[in-house]
Image (tube, rainbow, N blue to C red; front, side):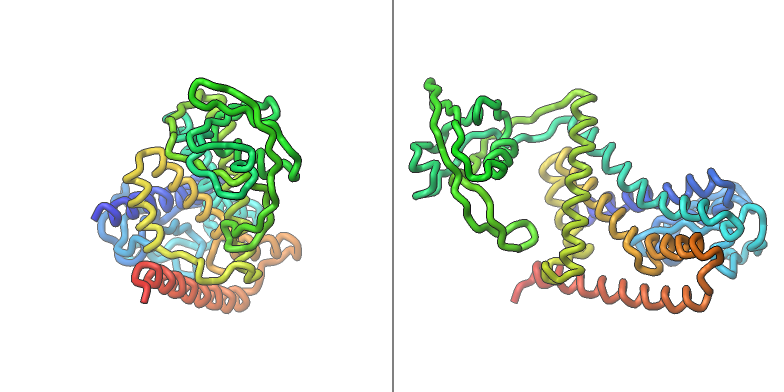
Length: 361
């Protein structure tokens, strides 16, 4: 039950942020917004200030949301039988310049990136668990064991550069180009220096690919500390982490498209629900990091040039800006049908992968 609740919280917040981007920029350029909905399908609850105002609603199917603007479709009649608005009215989406329409559509994904950044900044200020550079295990026959490194040793520095966290230690070793380095080690009350030359090994990366990397044969233990950063440092780390997550997701999507990563790695709503529950149980910072990850993922996926997604609309608008006239309605109709079919098949495939992971046979 907690898993479902946290999944709805995470998805609800991220959908709200995405649609809020469309809504605010639409209002900024003077477009009338008819509906702001969390969820699809029949309206469950909602409120508005009367005829001609935005109907804010929660709808029955909680797997998305939408902002309906005047002039987006040929029929702007309200579902409840409200007034029909003129598509060519001054506050219609259809009569705005192509650049205003691009700004409105792009604002949704953009808000997902901005939201992720601020969530990460807040998380770093709140306090994040940092793995300390304390050796938890030593691999037999690898350079660290040969050099005399032992479980419980704390690595203080590499080549006189201070090492405060395990990720810094790991990245320094990987970037060594195989050169020998001097490790300053603390063992109980003793501190001494050991020269170690990393060994090139073939490993499996995050995307299941075989890659060569520099290793010395150590793994972290369970030593951690919660570190809270000041505003300036949190701002810097938030920007860095936002870029890292973005780069990782873009790389992953590209590898899926080029089939460098098998399609069975695609996850769906069940995986998101499971991860939401797990991260919530680990604490507020873990949940915030997960929300930032999903928010960036949502922003990137919506920018893909697939009709019916924001990226598909942006593609049509960019073509319009170049050729000076809109893409024909017939082309858009068939493209949107193809895009919707693709997304439905993708969702079915993702659900199949989720069920296979949860109930392996």
